[in-house]
Amino acid sequence: MSERTPPTLRDAVPGDADAITALYAAEVAGGVNTYELVAPDAAEMARRIAAVQAAGYPWLVAERDGRLAGYAYASSFRARAAYRSTVEDSVYVAADMQGMGLGTRLLAALIAACEARGFRQMVAVIGDQANLASRRLHARAGFHPIGTFPGIAWKHGRWLDTVFMQRPLGAGTAGSPDHD
Image (cartoon, rainbow, N blue to C red; front, side, top):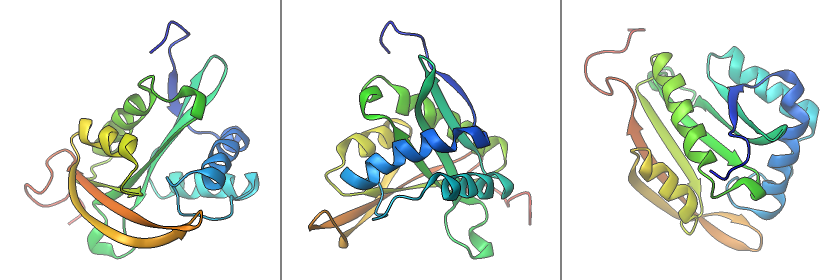
């Protein structure tokens, strides 16, 4: 981190929707960390945040120097009940805040929050095999490559791969989950 004020990590609140929407919209428009093609408005983003939290998943934000610098959340990996112990993570950091360890801090806090909730596996679905920053972030956090779907998405005038990485949470696959 630089010598600026260290980031504060906290749970997202409804008032964060505008800043989260702006950060995400920039990624939708110019990046490949999401394969969404049209950015949601603030009302839709507020609905998404509320739905994630109401379902029992964490949505965290990082503030730095008085503004939202990034966010991370976990959500259901798949809808079928047998997957209920597995979450998918999403981590976004503002362009001018990247490379300062903020993504690492957000992902570590997200992993801890998911473990505290009893989840057993976390899956990263990484847009584009060339997204080395996200692949390295997840590898540093203990994720292992699971596989790549080549040319599965079309965005920005090109075919993009999708990389899956996975890491155990808490006891992982030892024993049965608490909800069985």
